[in-house]
Image 1 (spheres, one colour):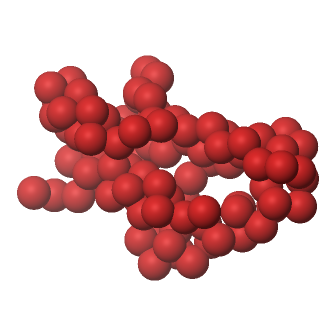
Image 2: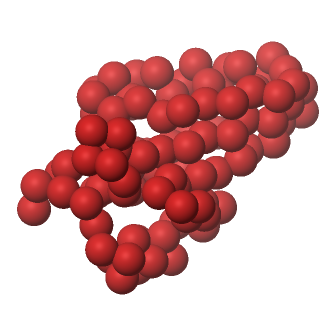
Length: 95
């Protein structure tokens, strides 16, 4: 399968069901993590750099004090692809 090939609605739902704490909103895969404070939130964001670079796929990140919202979509494909779910799985393993 081409990693940048758009997934069907059924494929998206199937993959989303296996990712706790992630939701599909329009053409993005999203998760919000809450931390004790701003410093911990930033430490978490810093841990996202290496896996994102290795994947060549970069999340949209919104930081609001102790909350980090991560949104994944494959911009050049115009929606969700396997790359989004692969990176979400890796991010889910990060404390």
